[in-house]
Length: 611
Image (cartoon, rainbow, N blue to C red; front, side, top):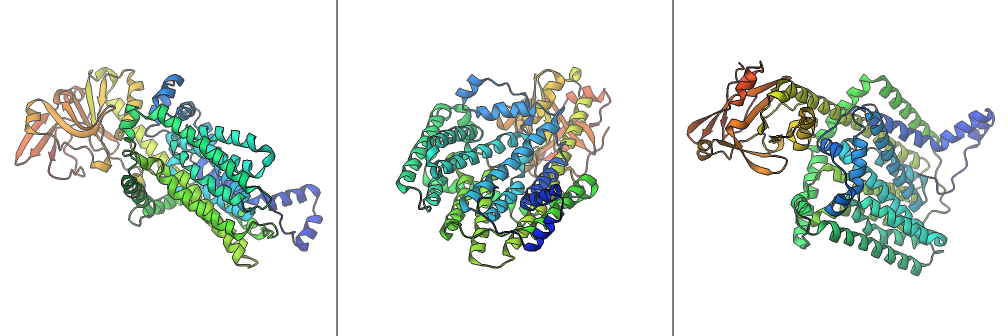
């Protein structure tokens, strides 16, 4: 967020005060007056991301940490090879050097906010817009998953870095005629790197004509040259995207299975954009019945964590004092060299397009792309850009002496509140990791490797996944250890030093472990059918009764389940699980049986008697 314009001179009273100080003190105060906003941002980064740095691993982290890396295989499999290299290297730091991992990711998050703020400041030639844009992008709480879940952060955070560098390079190629080729070449390299972290960045190509339109407002630049450079860049980026798709995606069965085939039908694209992207993401972020309640719980938990940590409280108080100092000492942007007001409207439009288009493109072109809140991280940069443009337009339209200070105060307040909320999210991730470790320890203690028969089907049954009993909406954000095959196998295979078993998982979002597909014919054949996921298959999973190890976890205790009583229609069918006897003899608590009505919702609030 560099200063790109001349500013008003300080008041005579302040100048007199500075003259009375020692040179070192005077230099420090001058620097603090000019860069106080930067210290506020650094303190917010520290509190929001580093106070609770021991957050462990989650979800795909286990798979990414142990994934074998072969450059040749990745190049021809359609994988994101830069993401694969960096994620594996960084996740190898956990747990011994987890602090270093968190520090590197936090620094990268801060760099992204600075790059965005600098980009805004260059477009609008306004320090105010740059500071507001950067501050708003430091704590994007609606995309917390992209920043706190390591498996996502090692891809999405550097993707945004290289994407923003691409935009910077393109802007410089337009505004610095003497170095056009250099900046275009660097921009192509940056774009290629960004695209090989996460494909979502492909959408930034739509922003290039708008950047050209902004540069064209400068009468000193040749507009025909700008148009030619833009066309060259668009063609270059288009060739990169097309080559990547043809080489790595088309005909790739693994990619097509995960994300579905390419569907360019406009009706289908619009339908997926609205129903698969905007609607569910609006529900999880700003819907009063869910998204805002998550934010409420994160703020409450953040305040609890703040009160419990002297370091966090001290840093937050210092950030507040420096914010107050920044507001008081803020100097208005000079208006002598500002671009025309229409540039602000173009930047605002660019921010809205950035958010809307990059949220759905290119994912909406595929009929099976999974949608999660991590997809919001790059689009939220567009909202921060647009908000900064609105602030700039307000200042240009309403000439009130204290208006800039008021806008800085509002942006600073949003930053402080977002920092507290992000602190709450980090605490929730830490609690989730702690519960995962408790469940893993309990399972491995009850089921040691020498007692586990080969070809066993390990089936968790509706485990207690509440990590924060007073903040229920935060409990729903994260997937547990035994709700995801990557996490479960990533824990059990290294512990057992063998892989001759199958884990069948389900999760709370589909109603937990369900045997809906079990029929009398399946039972007669010695099988149970449950709706779940293995490492190879998702759907109806058929499990031999004699090979099923069914367990649950309640009140910090693991229970083996000895059998099921299934109500199918008006009949009751018994399915006794013989593997339970092995662990009963080892002293593991065993529930004799659990009754399940396949036509009713499962309720485990009352546990059966344990023997």
